[in-house]
Image 1 (spheres, helix red, strand yellow):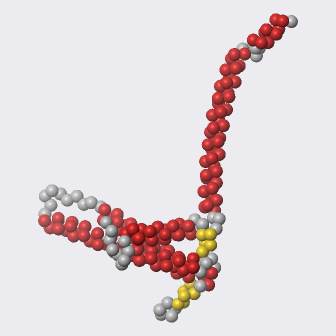
Image 2 (tube, one colour; image 1 turned 45 degrees about the horizontal axis):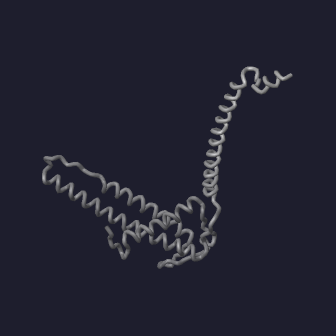
Image 3 (cartoon, helix red, strand yellow; image 1 turned 90 degrees about the horizontal axis):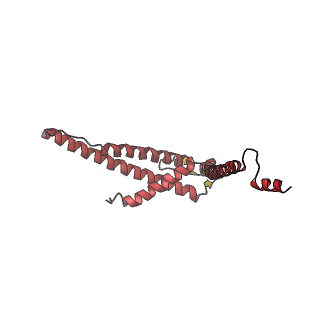
Length: 195
């Protein structure tokens, strides 16, 4: 179902959510950092107060995360199914329907608030990129991912080497049984007999 929310479809909203969440994840993973330029970039509001780009970006990211959590809580609440007894009175049935309607209304409101928060956050993200206040970094988490990948490769190589070692040990044991207790070979017996 595609709903129209202030000119946005659910598909467009999902793209906005994904962009904001990807940016926030990259900031948390330290794949990108907010440069000091963002602190120096000052914007006035309608009341004449001044605020920094870095501060507004941080506030909008936190607000988006809070609204996203509120939406998930409302979604879980709306998904709860209330089993009514078969002999429920019309009053109880009407109350259950009203409760369901209110949960769906709250879910819709939380969705719109999450969408508004994501659009605001995306606006500040775009401003930060425009001013060059976002820098790509080689983060510790990126290095950790590379190390984990390398470790998995090394563990695979170790496993293969252990398998090969076991094969060689079995072959060695077979040869020892073939040679006998003194380690003599059939060719050695033949050569001794020639002397």
